[in-house]
Image (cartoon, rainbow, N blue to C red; front, side, top):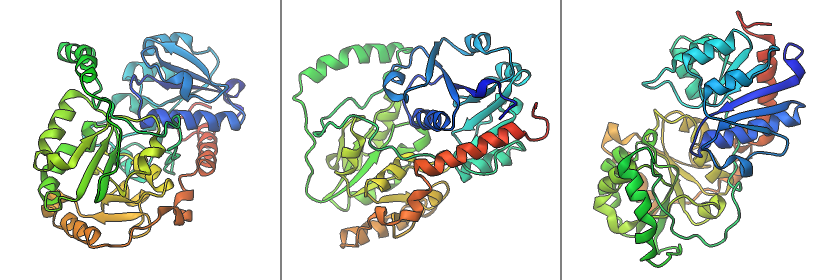
Amino acid sequence: MSAVAQRTVYQVNLQNEFGGGEVYTRFFSLALIELGYRVVLYASRKAQFWDSLLPAGVELVRVEGAAQILRALPRDKSLVVTQTALDAGAAQWVAGRHVLCGFVHMPMYERDPPGFRHYHLLLAVSRHVLDSVRGRGYGSVFTEPMYGVADPRRGAAGGTLFARSEYDWDRRKLRDRLLGWTEPLWRMARPATEFVQRPGLALGIVSRLTPIKQFPLMFGLLAPLIARYPQLNLEIFGSGGYASVRDLRASLAPIANQVRFWGQQPDVAAVYAQLDFVLSGLPEKEALGLNLIEAQFCGTPVLAVQAPPFTETVIEGRSGFFFNDPREDGGASFAQLLARLQGGAERPDPRLATAHLARFSYASFRERVERALHAAAAGPAGVPA
C-alpha cells in the first residue's frame, strides 16, 4: 500500500455511546495492527469506554469534533477510515488531501449522509446495507459485505446478573438530567434484583433499545399473541432513551407480568446462556444484527423476521427460526411459531452450523479487511493515487 504514508490508518469514531459500531472499531483496529499498520483513532472526548475496549497499540486521540481532526491529520497523503460519517464540508476537505474510506453501519433507509458523496470508497457491513448504498447511486462501494465479528465475551465475566438501569439519559435534555440525577435515589430504595430463571420458555432481547429496532411497533402487534402463553417470559437486556423505554413499556402492557427489564449487562455471554431464544426487531432499519450473531456463537438460537439483513445471518432450522413480518400478516406466522415452540419443537444448536458461523469469525473478517485495503490502495475511478 505504497500510496499511503507510513502504512498508517487514521480512523475516526465520534460516537459518544457504546454500541455495535464501537465493537466494530475494536476488531477493525486489531485487524489493521495484525496486518502491519500503525493505527491512530480520533474519538470523542465524551466517550469513556475506549481505554478498556481498544487493543494494545492503537494511538487514541481524543477530540471535540471533526474540525480538530482536520488540523491533526498529516500533510502527506494518508488513508482515513471513518466509523462515523464526516459531514459534507469535512469529507470534501479530507477527500481532497487523503484517501477517504468509510464504514456504512446503517442501511440507506430514509437517510443519505451528504458527506458520503465525497468518499472514495464505502465499506458496507452487510449485503442489505451494500444494496441500499448502491440503490442510492453510489458507485465507489467495496464489492463484498464486511460483516463483523461476534464478540460475546468482550465484557468482564461477572457471573451473577443483577438488574441495572434500562435508561440511557441524554444529559442535553432538562428532563433527562433531572431523571438521571434522581434515579440513583429511587433505585437505592429497591433491593438489588438478581436474575433467576422463571419456569417456562425464555425469549430475550439483548440490544440497545434504539428507534432503529422498532420494538414498540413490533410488540404492539406481537404482545397480544404472547399473552396467550402465560408461561412464556420476555427478558429484556439493554438500555435506551427515555422515550424509547416509555414506548416499549406501553406496547408491552398486555404482557407486563411476563416481562422483566435488566438493563445493559457487562457480561453478555452470561446473558445469552440464560435464554432459550433471542428475538430480533423489525428488519429494514437494521444493518446486520450483531446481537443475533453473538447469540448463535453462544449456542442460543434466534427468532427473526424473514427479511434482510437477518436472512444473511440466520439459517432456518439450524441457527434459529424465521417468522413473517407481523406488519404483513398481523402476526399469524409468529403465532404459529409460538405454538410450535410451546408444543416442544426441537431447539437447534447454532454452534453446529460451523460453515455459517465461520463467515463471522475474526479470521474471515481480517481477510476481508486486507482485501478492502487493497481496493482502497488500487482505487476506483477518481480515487487519488
